[in-house]
Length: 194
Image 1 (cartoon, rainbow, N blue to C red):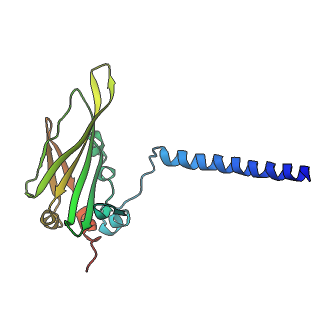
Image 2: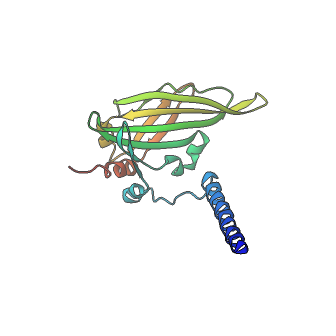
Image 3: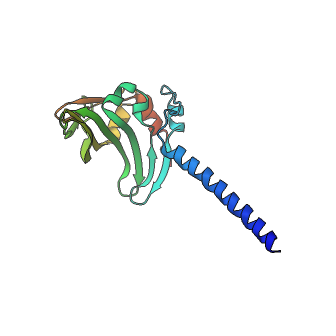
């Protein structure tokens, strides 16, 4: 009988070890950056919409996260790591559209982004969220990260559904970001009709 319990204990411990190794590999895979980006047809609002993430947030209410625009244009990755639009909806504020931007760049100093302009949009509100220095190579240049948000008015989104929305982020160096009309149209298609 004692041998039976030892064999059962051995199988239980072996299966737990196997499960732990499998779980560790899954966690490692999820935490490792992969070049396997989702294949998005950026000319199709429906395909863009299929790649959106929906969440219920405690304060903001319902939130819809559009895909990262840096995946659309690899040239953006020289200056940005993330550019994505979020639509939140709650009883107090109604529909709110916020563009979250993470500027990630190598330079000899901060770019100090402070505002945003657009040739066609007036209803834009800029907020600087965080600033962080990453790596410096012998004090020649550093990798800087500036996170910011840009609240975009509902009318500006509607006006840009047939054309792109061009934004200029102003700082010591000005950067241009273009939100394609299909991207905005996909976000508008997530609004539920009442």
